[in-house]
Image 1 (cartoon, rainbow, N blue to C red):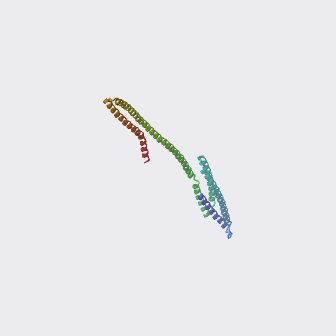
Image 2 (cartoon, rainbow, N blue to C red; image 1 turned 120 degrees about the horizontal axis):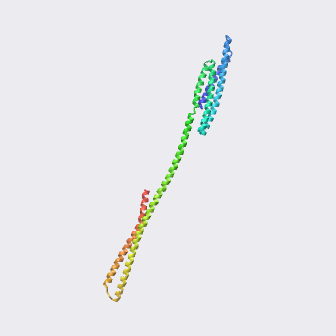
Image 3 (cartoon, rainbow, N blue to C red; image 1 turned 90 degrees about the horizontal axis):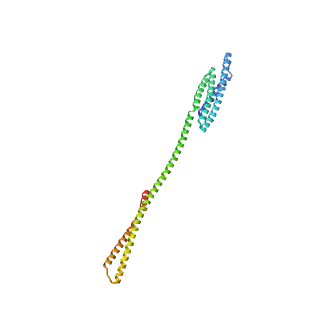
Length: 282
């Protein structure tokens, strides 16, 4: 847009120079030697006036093109649709073709007249304006910008999809780890139940043995009491009593050992779990 404003400034300067030339020609002059010179001056003034009118029309045309171009560029950037962009660009090309035709007409009119150096300088500036206007109206930067915006939108959707997939995988992994922990705990409880069952079976057997030994000891003691009351000494009863007492002591010791083993079998898995949790915390 700054280039178009610069072009307008140059056109205005050229118009001022043409106006100055026209005013200089309009000033009263000494008597000319012949009527042909007056005719030439009148033609020159008319040609300059026509050129000024053509330049004024061109300036107005460029101003309207600038406003229309700014509005259409804003609409293109907001819409972001390829078909609409192509239609708008085609219309811009048509407007540019009309501007070029106007410039060509002005240039042909300037070439048809035998102008002074001021007109030649104006023709050069008009050609420069044409080249700069073509550069300003180039639609390629707009297409590149639209493609960049599309790529950014596609990348954003892809990143969101990947983030959602990663979150899902993390949730599944967490559930898998929790399931593994539960399975390990279940296996530990099963092993604990088996070990505890064996210990309780052993303890029950030792208790039965202790009860049997105590029953034998009571029977022998009762026989010894009867023999002592009768005043009869029975050595085999004394031996039986000693053996029964020894068996009772052995059964008591086995029972105590079975109780200790049952307690240890109960505490073993708990201590293992506590050590495992302590290792994970470290």
